[in-house]
Length: 131
Image (cartoon, rainbow, N blue to C red):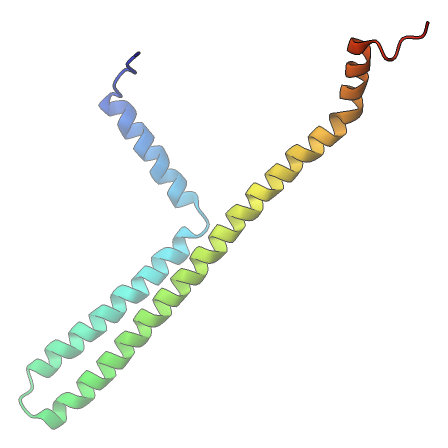
């Protein structure tokens, strides 16, 4: 068995930096960041309502804070997750379409080469020779 040389730390850094750069260049990345921010904001709204209500002793004054923060936070989380799934599905569909287009382009090139390949095959087998 032949062993492959170990990757140096500099090579590993460059490989990771290029992968990070490719991830940033993905058109879906800004959308994912916004959606992640919505989800984090939703959890922050719930936490704010929770801690705000915990400081108030009187229950009648706690309810508006808990209800508004809880419902608003759940709404932000729901919207963020739904948009995240939608964006992810759209990105996956775009990647699949690109892969299908690449395959169709390759097939079209092969179909365009078919007459030439047939002439080469006839030359090699001697079918095209006249006696």
